[in-house]
Length: 227
Ligand code: ADP
Ligand code: MG
Image (cartoon, rainbow, N blue to C red; front, side, top):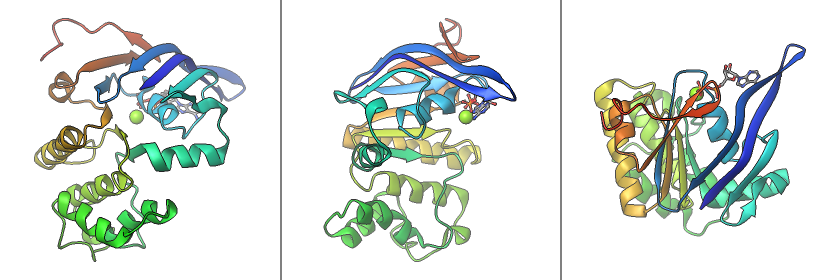
């Protein structure tokens, strides 16, 4: 379970403080699929980065499985991410100098997991890229790179998957396939999934939608719900 209590983020914009996320209370149950939606600049990525412990909130606490992650050191946060969180980015963020196989291997090597090579092979199979492991990111299409990134995110069997507009840089057909993969992963592995998306149809599949506008949650407009 993830619990946000009074979580906000204020940054300095020039010489003035700018609040990009106003105090937010929100609870995500284990296994829940939450879609975060809202216009560009509404604070979606900021919120996801806070959930992942990639960034620290200005106020409030973020409790992941009973641990307030805002009290953790950098090392503690890195360990938390390694064990509990898989992150999928809009622009894939693969290491360009490593093959697909090696990219999937990295998190397992950091976690000193046993049999990482067999597992990397299995994960690449799971995302439909069994025969592309030796390819470098530049030799793969956007959709294939995102599949590798999903395999990498799943490497240590995280109970929580966070995805920031994972299809935002893909054409609609490829995006659909990547989304189907993520939803399938969520079903079969029973992970918690927090997905930032612009896709209303996709958001409609979520158990819960969090709509942000100017850094604040807003009620869903009834006309759009379920659209
Ligand atoms: P979204 O993902 O919904 O498009 P973001 O969370 O990326 O929105 O950003 C929310 C707002 O905060 C935007 O206006 C963005 O420009 C601003 N912002 C984000 N990070 C910073 C920062 N480090 N410094 C100043 N402004 C920021
Ligand atoms: Mg964003």
